[in-house]
Length: 208
Image (cartoon, rainbow, N blue to C red):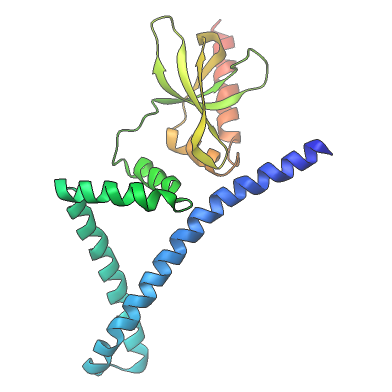
């Protein structure tokens, strides 16, 4: 019963960790979209378009305006004053919004706007047992060992760091992006990782 309760609790928390940031992002975007669309509808009325076309034009203009605002903010944040203001706003307000940090880090990672900290994907046995963990190599050392980051399911920017001996690290020919998707999806799609592991183990056995 305890295992069942733990499974239900961790699954709910993991699902909540995915849904909440997406929900917050949707609410913000939807609210901004409606506000802009309602604000420019009087302009479309003045132009004298048909009732059906008015709504479509207003929606298209709203999307263009939102994209333009995002671009303008991006330009401003690249300036010294903009960076200072953004850092202050982020520290005092944005970081306190549920899911903000997760959304921000995920977008930065997949957009490549910052250097990616992971060099490759691996399955590791940190305690020398048969159970394996999905991890990302963050550094390699002269003795052959690796520093590996093992993320939490559904929250890839939280997890644990391990220093693992070479014999307990199994590097996989899988992209970091594909592995990260399986982490965000709470393990869905991990079959690709396992298949690669089995394939590479089979190849290594044949060579030996």
